[in-house]
Image 1 (spheres, rainbow, N blue to C red):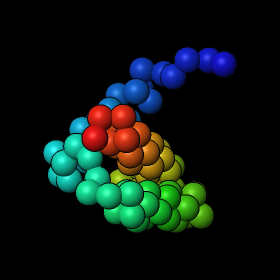
Image 2 (cartoon, helix red, strand yellow):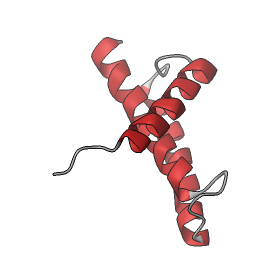
Image 3 (tube, one colour):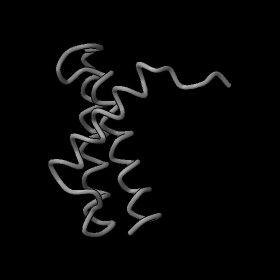
Image 4 (tube, rainbow, N blue to C red):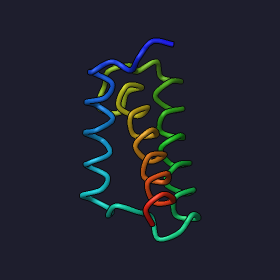
Length: 80
């Protein structure tokens, strides 16, 4: 498997840090994490259906946000 590109790491890192600044490092509980993940997945779905790749709410950014939420969940479980 090929490694993760620097561009992908940078985008996911940016979205993760933005989410932490805005909402804190961990979710209050898993239900809130679930809601956040579903919300971001829904936005990714919309971008895919519109075939919007690089717009402000395009596939690239929304996919990074889904990953960022998943990382916040994992970090909360590991460090919370």
